[in-house]
Length: 451
Image (tube, rainbow, N blue to C red):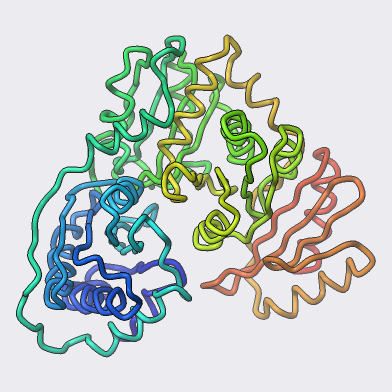
C-alpha cells in the first residue's frame, strides 16, 4: 500500500481497515520513534491518547508496539481530546501522538503528531520522514519490545490548567447548551465546565459514540449546528457551544441561535489577551475578517497575517512570540497553551467575556463583526493553476499578493482570496466586503471566471 494516500501534509488520515490498520499503525509507530531519534527529539518516552472511535484502542496498541520496538517508552493517556493530548505533551515535555480523525465520518481514523512541548510535526518538520520510513518498515518483522508502557490520567490536570488561564468563578450565572456531537467534548466539557456553580450546562449528544448517530461532528457545516440552535432557543439559554469530533475546535451561537463567526471570536479573544499583554502580537490567517487586524491595532496589538493551516500558524506563533492566534475554521492558538490550539480555552474566554457584562452575546459579538463574508465556496475545476491565472489577469490593475493562493484587495476594504486545495482539484473562494450587495457582486464575478 502507498502510505502517501494517508500520511498527508498535516497528519495521518484514512479509512479503517483498508487504509489504516494494525500493520500500518505499527509501521508508523516505528517510523515516529526513528524520526524522533534521528531529529534529536527523543525524550525517552512519548504520550499517546485516542478519541471515541471504536478503532482507536487497537490502533493505539499496534502503534505503541512499534514505538516500544524502537526502545522508547509509552505513556498511554487513554481517552482524550486533541487539546488534552497537547496539554499532556506540554506539561510532561514529551512528544505525543493523538489518534483521531477529527470531524471525519465514522469509518475514518488518523494520527496527529507533536514534538515535546506540543510543537507541531508537519510535512517539512518530520511528517515526510515518517512517511518514507513507515513505507520501508511496512510488513517487516517487529523487533522485541524493549520500551515499557504505563497509563496516566490527564483529564483533571488538563481541567485545572485551563482554569488557571481563565477564571470563571466570578462571572454572572449563564445557561449554556453544549453540543458535543457524540465526540470528545462529551468527555472534557463535564470536567472543565461542569464543575462551575456559575454555569448551567444543557448537554446535547454527550454520549461518546464514534458512529455519530445524531449528526457529523463537524460544526463548520451549517446543517450540523441546527440542533444546537434550536436547543438554545428552546432552553432560553445565553449561548450555545458546538465542538468537533476531537474537541479541538469550538463554534459559538448566541441566544437567538445565530452563529457568531470565528473571526469575531478571534477578535474578542485577542482583545482579552491584549488587555493582559499590552502590545503583544496576534496571528490571524489571511481569510479571517479584516476586522481582526483592525481591532488588534485599535487595542495596541501587532497583527500578523499567516497562511491557512495549523503548522503555519504554530510556526508563526513561535517565531513572533505571539500571545494568541485564530483561524476562520475555529482553531484558536494560545501562547499559554504551548502555542497549540484549544477550542475549550477559547470557549472559556467567551464565557468570561459574556459573564463579565450584562449584554447578550448578540450585542457583544456585534462589536467584532464589521463586514459581510461569503464563507468558503468550493469549485471543482480541471486545472486550478489555469483558473488562478485567469482571475489574476482579470484583476491585474488591483493590488494582489500570493501568500496563500491569490488575494486581491480593493480600495473599499473588500477582498477576495482564491486558493487551491492541497488534496483535491478544488479552488476555495472567500470574499469579504462592507455590505451584502458588494460581497455578492464580487463573489459572482469570480465564480463566473472559474466556473
